[in-house]
Length: 220
Image (cartoon, rainbow, N blue to C red; front, side, top):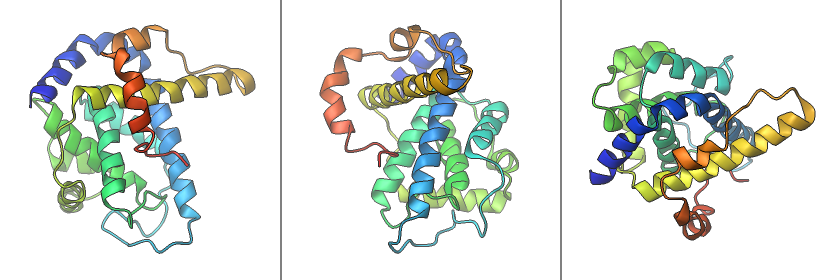
């Protein structure tokens, strides 16, 4: 609980600088989730069907879906980092339910919902999130419960874990910016202030990186 309060406090302090880089954070998250979804689509191993699994692949892209949630959910910026952490916990605890193109959208909206309820003092109800996510309230209720059991109700995120994932996403953002500068007109812009303003304990990065390499959601 103390870590949650500390992250909430830091999120308030970081509201302005985070607003500048959130488009890039969402781009990095969507890129990672797209990569792991496409990889798992091609897996030959048996994959269990769950409530998160759609009959068809949604027509909306992962990036557009995240941008839609960001536009309408109005949750704190840290919720998206925490939601990504929850997704990582889910895939590790549910190895037979890998993220793929058929379940990624439902997993995203559910992880953001759970994160917002845990992290923010005020959040929209399940009916509102259901409309944002394009599903029914009943399905949203069911997915929330399935997700909570899927992560073993492990909702607390320590400051060091939060920082570790921020480091990882920052590296992905840097890589994507370099890629765009080489092949496209640069559209991902974020200053060097990211490390100073978003990461709270950068000196921990070296000690955490070895451990975190085993945890990264989208590492192939």
